[in-house]
Length: 601
Image (cartoon, rainbow, N blue to C red; front, side, top):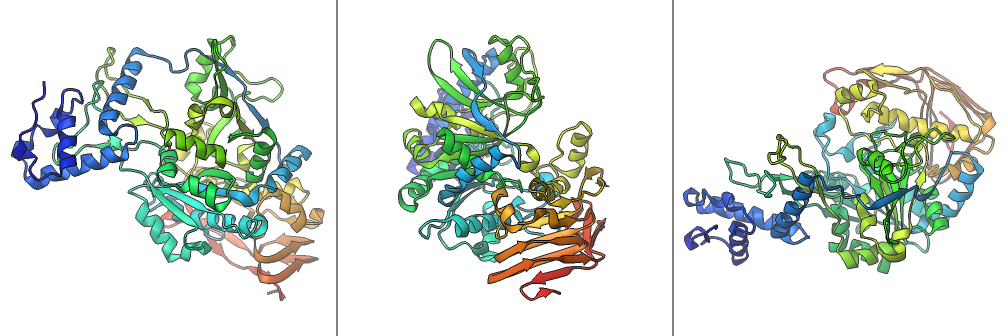
């Protein structure tokens, strides 16, 4: 039995810290090892440890650190016993819809979504640094592409402001909430300040911060890992599921619904430049199917290493949940539920009927806010320890409890639990995250997996614009694949259509009224931006062209032929900035034609 710590060891602590330390030192919590060296420590060092513990206790909303220990012991025991959390659930294909760009079905659904676009709020999950990419800064300041070097945060805000201007109702300012961490808060705030919020008004952006993580766990008794030098608890990230709790505790979700007239909530991540092309489509699906939660998804090959979205029904009841099921769980779940072949491709489509989850989510805000009031935004947790021994008593490395934002359907109840579905479209239209270092991406690409590096993220951004233009009949050639630092990508032509020019596929026919008269060669570069009105009636481009139109002006491009030396790529050198070196190339802009209200210059 753990003895209470002597009063003299606690003399410099606050009353709340004393109570917490004694609680953790108790046999019930089992953390007495944290205080074993306290007699030889200075009062300042003991206070530092207590202050950290108090912060961790306050940040964990599911019962503080005592609750964390209790929850961890239960989940670790289930893991040791091999308990399957999906036992007793029968899988079915969830409700949703799959689309191809340019089809009548796409256009009709997108049109319904456009009616809702002016009443949406945005939640950006951005707690990570760019260290994994070989970048010493926040990922939001990385350029989405090198043609314009627009950073991700600028691009996202530019998009939001553009739909606010085009589709906003009654002067409504579309809000943005950014979830940051201890690592990214200062950098995010500095980036916003240096750029005057990229045009957003004061109060239009909310920032919520994750805690410093949760204690790392050494064993099945949930013993906290400790730094032997500082005697501080070692922490690990709790996961992006924290966003729901933060939207509750900050009051953001409730305020947006009750005071700002926001009806929908879009969650997106920090380095996916394709995040918004399909947003009106998602809104249309949610409206048609009356979905409380709608996941943007991509076609998924059977057994592909990406979670599949599945509708699960509890055996012997009408309890339903539509959730992401990890790929290594989906096949055995199907085999044990009357599907002897497990996770297999549909013969007609060539893909699994269970679409792949990419963690871009759309919520009905009223229903979402109501659930937060009931649950306080607490998400279910899981633990994934790696064991050294067959008895499953020794960890290879410390574990921790985690939570994921896509598990929100597990806390829905009643009819709401049945109103969860998906919108599926090919990944080249919606998903190309930049998350891996180039060296790691090479190996992934060799295995046939998307590398997720800066070069492919850039190439896919150009590719999405080109695909939408082709879908309406524009003639856009593609150059051959290039290889930079071992990464293969199609980087030409570069097409960048700014959000104040076009925000979604529905607008392309308006700005390209005669698409068969628009031709872009494989060596070209085209950048078009407003905020004035731009219409491209006929264009033959074989080089570089930048079209800009100031507010209140109109630009019409007609019978324009441009042929020049354009922009080329050269290998990056050792003195190049990090965002250049991580790609392995830089742009040399040899010759650029510019077109504006005064014509061609």
